[in-house]
Amino acid sequence: MKKKFQLLFVLLILCSVKSISQDVNLDSLLDTEEKAKNQNKTQRTIATFKTTRLIDGHTVETTQGGVLDLKISHRFGELNDGFYNMFGLDEASIRIGMDYGLTNRLTVGGGRSSYQKLYDGFLKYRLLWQSEGKKNIPVSVTLLAAAMFETDTAAMKNEKKISTSPSTADKFSYAYQVLIARKFSPAFSLQLMPSLVHENLVDSSATSNDIFAIGAGARLKLTQRSSFSIEYFYTIPGTRLPGTYNTFSIGYEIETGGHVFQIHLSNSTGMTEKTFIAENYGRWSKGDIHIGFNISRVFTIRKPKDMKM
Amino acid sequence: MYKAPVKYVRILFVFVSVIAATGFRQQPSIYQTTNGQIAFRSDAPLETIKAVSNDLIGLLDINKKNFSFKIDVHSFKGFNSPLQKEHFNENYMESDKYPYASFSGKIIEDVDLSVDGTYEVRAKGNLLIHNVTQERIIKSNITVKKNVITVNSGFTVLLSEHDIPIPKVVYQKLADEIKVEVNATFEPR
Image (cartoon, rainbow over all chains, first blue to last red; front, side, top):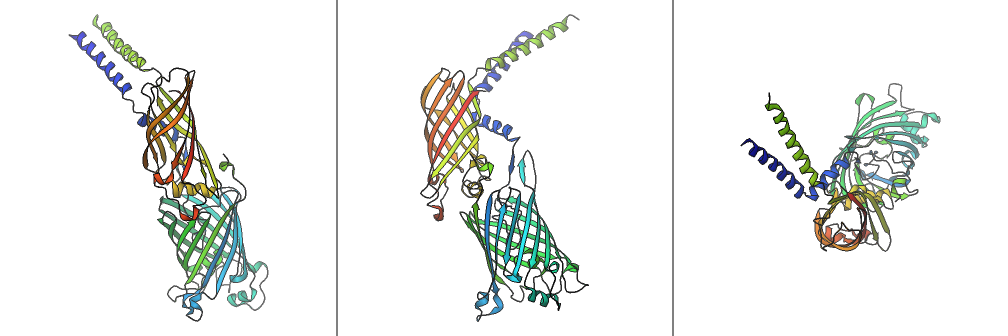
């Protein structure tokens, strides 16, 4: 009896093993294979934002290595200028600038703005890249350091209430930002931007030279090629320059091949960190709202290594 | 005291049976590739776009003549600019939502792929791209040499058949008909 059981047991094992080998499903076997292969791979999240600027401020995106991004930005006058000034369309503040990707992580850029006749330059470094797979990084982090040089001395004397011309050093301002973003889904990305603006010249010794602010922004994809964006900078009250307000902007962006076109409404005239974080005198409640747009066009100057086949 | 050795013999017998059973299974009927090459090309009036990936994985069962291929869409390299690659993934293939393209089915011809030689076959199966499945018959060349199977195949994919619209502004830059070439070497699994 015992022997019979034993034989049955062995037969059962043989049969089960045989049937496993016969019912091999190639598709599921391939899935297992793929999973094993992917264990050692890290997938970086792409396109957290469409371009390197959300509306006024920077996004965590850096310009890819070897790519030149030409940017032309406009802010028209204020909507409350009335019909005579065509609700602000008669005047425009413009910034023409360029960003160049030295590597995929490091961008250098600069520009010139008509508002305050301002020159700006910046360095931007992608510290962390949101990734999945072997390395799991929940957020992207980018550091930004910018220097701004204002050359409209008449406006500066008026704004800072000084009688003598400002020195060269007085005309400099600096901005530092830590940009932290996460792409939650293909359609939704959120960004936080703790910021510090340092102005070498302020109107009185009672005013702080360092302006601290925290910004937040988001992008919501509407269609495959267009999205809605929103951006807000909240200045920490004790460090706020007198008479200034927080910048709030909403926008719509659309991309067509190598171009990204952004159109928005904002209460800021300037398009550099010192102007939209620290020196914004416009208020939404008073109708100091500017229609604005940014156009970005990319050119591949040098083909990066990972693009070569 | 006398029964114990018998018990051990029985256990040993079971073990040997199991090993023997698994041993019989080891006929090399399934072949595998993990670094096959897949390249595509779009020839439009204003622009030629090329990209390639060496991450094609595939299985081929020469007894049952069925096969399964899979490619991670993110793994394509090439393109004319980093932005183009981003658009490929974000706007056209939607790689975050549909990370894989695949082709699985059966070889129509009755060929014995355990014998060295060159065979021209038709592979019939389901081609899955951008979450849309199309039944396709794809001609392939198979070379068998010393237990190594090389598969070469060229075919076209119509973007319109896989629910990938081409925006008007890039009509002149992106072809609807994409040429695909596959090159993979299979070894016994």
